[in-house]
Image 1: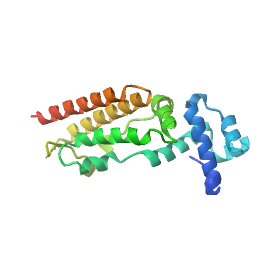
Image 2 (image 1 turned 120 degrees about the vertical axis):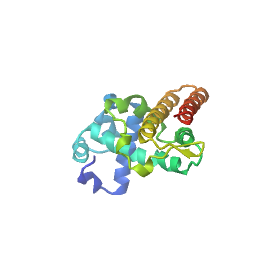
Image 3 (image 1 turned 180 degrees about the vertical axis):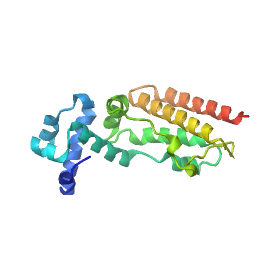
Image 4 (image 1 turned 90 degrees about the vertical axis):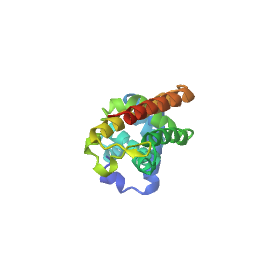
Amino acid sequence: MPTTTFLNLNEDKQNQIFHALIKEFSQYRLMEAQVARIINDCSIARGSFYKYFEDIHDSYRYALKRVLKEVHFDVFQQIRAEKQNSLQAFYDATTSFIEDLKGTQYEFFYQKYVVYNQFELKHKEYDYRKMPEEYLVLLVDGRPVSDKEQIIITYKWATSAAHETIRNVLSGGNQEQLFSDFASLLKLLNKGLRNRG
């Protein structure tokens, strides 16, 4: 994460550097990005860059954290609000996230993240077993699923499918077909939960 020196910069200078990072990481994947282009774009010295960030990976993590804070959604808030079928909230959140992201200044940054950079950063999946119990809500036809392990496994696979849908749409896949496939998968999960013994 950025150093105290960076955090002590005025907001305009921080934003200037942030926008240079977004430009670089929207055009190049992390392993191809260059400090030289970033510092040239925001008119800072190479030495200053290393006073602000440990390395290019550190600057990327800063940019990613800021982008995710601006564009990400709280799917679990949507799940808790859904009163019939919780998996519908996964679908709604995923499709609206994609629609809201398209055409923004972060679309290509996020595309590079989901296609390449999350793997280069060795991004780990969220461990739902560490989630507070009150967030582990799963409704099927308005009835709660009580088995915690079934909820965790369902969340894990629904999240994985949501991320794969986002990755494929942002990679230029057929959005209509990908949304349809995602909806079919969630219906299949819902059907399995409905028929659980």
